[in-house]
Length: 285
Image 1 (cartoon, helix red, strand yellow):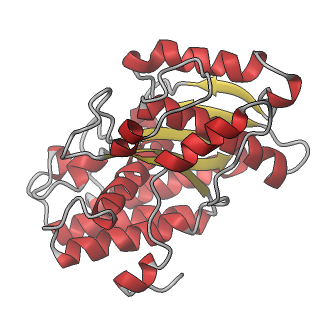
Image 2 (cartoon, rainbow, N blue to C red):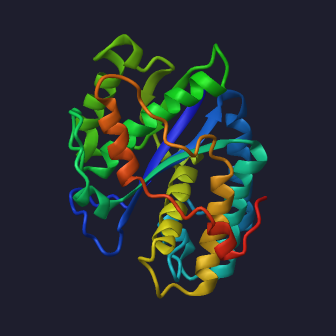
């Protein structure tokens, strides 16, 4: 069994003109059942070392607290360089254990400029729902094509009350409605974590999503006043993340009129420039 975790960054609902969060990202990491314990042990060790063996009671890693200018919550007042190094160690631990990363990013302004010509059972202008529907396609493809004939996947995500009914409708639609060749078969279950404090995979997914969003906001010119050192930091983070993504091209759905949905996803997807590494002076790992 392979677990595919999801968390989001930049969810402003129907507000597609938020100048502070112009990009939405739904992202996470995939973990095989054989590597779950190793990942948790690595995560716990990194966090324990950061706090000198004294992890705060009821600690939960929130990326916005970790990467706020002055630190918030359990990171309030902590030196920025220590917090940036913790971020690097957490992302590098994903590479060391050998997990993959998946994400879909949307430039919200593009939703106002494009129009979906395909009938889907949710608001096509909702970044969360559109990204969730696409990642079902991506994960189903990844399990089928890359993980072996007997492999199956489970999607695990934080429950969002405001999206719950629509998410359930999407799941039902993708699993049980439409032609047989369009039904999702390699994802066997969708679940919500009982307690995200005990699930480092959700916490790491939160960190991944935030780092992707902040890099893309810089890359797309939304944050022109960002200091160079901060730009480079998020470019470094994205470099680690990007190299753990299996399929960078849009995974298209084939079927009647689905070309319209594929075109819409392509029009609203947010991607960095082809030569972005050269722009930031970064080498592939």
